[in-house]
Amino acid sequence: MHIHFNSSPPSDLRLHARVINQGAALTGLDAALIEGAAASRFTGRAGQVFEGFATVDGAVRRIAVAGAGEPGGAERRLDLERAGAALTAKFLVSTEAAMVLDLGQAGLGADDAAAVLLGLRLRGWRHDAYRTKLAADKRPSLETVHVINAPTGTEAAWQREAALAKGVEFTRGLVTEPANIIYPASFVAACEAAFSGTGAEITVLGEAEMEALGMGALLGVGKGSERESKLLAIRWNGGAAGDKPTVFVGKGVTFDTGGISLKPPPGMEDMKWDMGGAGAVAGAMLALVSRKAKANVIGVMGLVENMPDGKAQRPGDVVTTMSGQTVEVLNTDAEGRLVLCDALHWAQQQYDAARIVDLATLTGAMIIALGNEHGGMFANDDTLAEQLSAAGKASGDKLWRMPLGPNYDKLIDSPIADIKNVGPREAGSITAAQFIQRFIKDGTPWAHLDIAGMVWSNKPGHTWEKGATGYGVRLLDQFVRDVVEG
Image 1 (cartoon, rainbow, N blue to C red):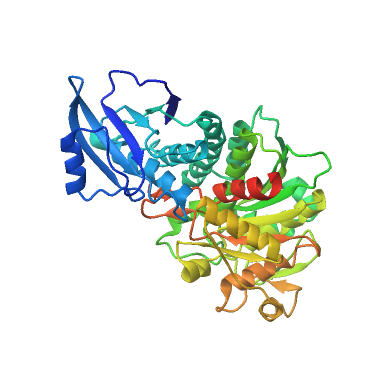
Image 2: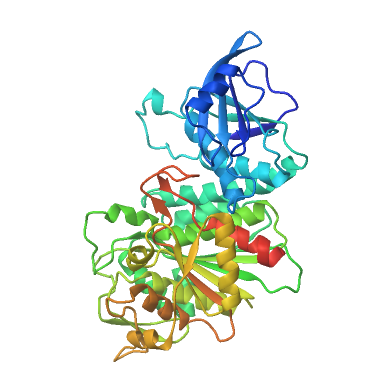
């Protein structure tokens, strides 16, 4: 979606839209349109859209009005995004190629106006690369939005939000691509291309380097695959030279069959998005780098493919992690924590982190507990947990804190190794988090985000089409804005 700022719109465009607050009077419109809006019970609530046709200066115009909700609403920013997104959802495949958007009707500030545009752009992202017979009425037509009457400062505010949109779109693309397109090496290549010339530093470890470092847990997951496992780190030094970096770590299982503990075939195709944590970290880093965030941030991604094969690790095998701790692998489908433990240890050894946040589509139990409304959060630091919760609320990538404790930790003690990779059926998400916590150094603020229910949606949301949501990018970007940049 191309967004342009104009002092006056091109004269030949038919589609004109505006954003108004809930309960505000419609003014400056044809009387029939005003009456039609009232008859349609249009009140301006967030995401509500009314459209009609009118003759203006001798030409037929398609007029749309989107509701922005109450000006003092608790979720004002998200309501404004819904207004923009609703316009895109309405007209994306409408045959209209361009829209004139009037932002002068709702008393918006620059950040408010940019929120409308963010929602508008995010809702327009689609992945049609493999559709060869898409019906004409299903093809996106809306490509350009001409913004008029934007508040002073909107263009600058939009540049920041456009960088965020770029990161979300990058994540959605990674998560959407099938596993024959995105696998560890191609994930790395996609990031190398995206970050080329940005000033970010990229480090890539192959299997030989990881074996020399003793990453037996991560490498064990990829043993059954013909695809080489990778460890990818992206570093952005945008803050003060002496500031410790914030480190984000993502699980990147580019396809998860379950390994020898094979998953049931129905629904296995969804496991292309088991790299959603790494995808979110990559997209968040792209957003931060693109807007030149004044922060020192590092994204680390453990990238593997979990396949069944004669070389694959077996249930009952014992592996030695980079930390030296040994793990009894009771279930090869509990592989994400094996990837994360080595990636986290490497990150802590490599960087003196101010704080660490890991993201992973880790457990089905998280979906049972929270559905598709919240990501689960586990943390060893109350301040970090509160900061992440606040960032989730502000960004719309909501989190719900879950417990940790020594009694849960006992459930993953192994009779023959230091730790086993699964506990009993109960508290499955908690014991997974307890496993990861064993690899966090004392004194390091850490949070684990289990986002299994959030990276993919089987129905459209306010700012996404059915499919990849880009969850996590906005959360991490907001966290950096609030906490690191301050």
